Image (cartoon, rainbow, N blue to C red):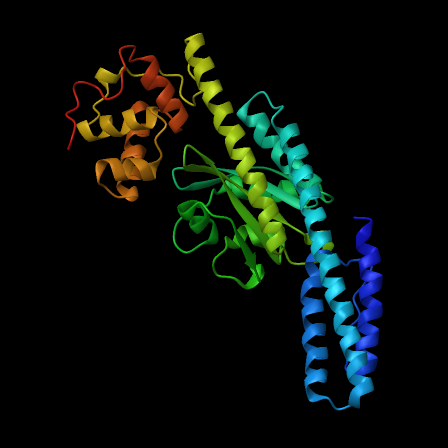
Length: 357
């Protein structure tokens, strides 16, 4: 922002004056990289340093007046920084809105996901990865970098060759289970990351945010500041969370429209198998599996299904895995498409399944 270098110059002068007045070794901020978010803690340190000098009152009345004047300048600088942070926040929101508008122009869910990484790089991240989450499996989709695209291609290839399971104490498992964004630091030494991926990516820190549809996490966005040679921070986390939230709403509507279009055409979504779709009555689903299937078709998340049926989320995932196998499909979307297409009389719960209290 045009006002940030001005604030940086003023703060540099203020630091120099405080250093001279108190004979302290105070680092001068770099006006080329300064930002309002980084200035607040600097001003806080200056305030307490000068306040301490006043309380000690070692320089007499004249020195006390000089330090009081410095406190006033610090207070004015804090006000200017607070104003700059508000301006910057509005500018960031506009940038996020512009990036989301470009992604929303996608005609399919696959094209949508391919646009996400570039949108993230437009917001200032150096490398952005988008992935799908299917039944506790982390499936890397596409990645954008500001340089060295071959490294991005290598990382995606490694992830696709051996899709990691979202289990144990890896960070991404927490992101999916809690549906919350987070920051990861000291990546190369962490035991909570997928070693094969971080070895290729070489990140020292990154942020990750979930993409959720109907309350169910269906994907993730990873981003870092690798070429800027700095760790991600809370501002990056907020930016990533805002982006993920906006993308989730659009992705949910796009997936629904794709599913309805497929039903209208009378041809399900692409499937791996060319075998005819099994008819529901021919599929040996148990009463509980049928109940789970109907809830899935209604757009209910694993967590909501678990609450409705008074079972654990782990049990729901196990039911879903068996349902996919029995219907001979590879995703929930395919399962729902086949289930609804072959049940024209569908009106909520099937009459054959006994409702549980």
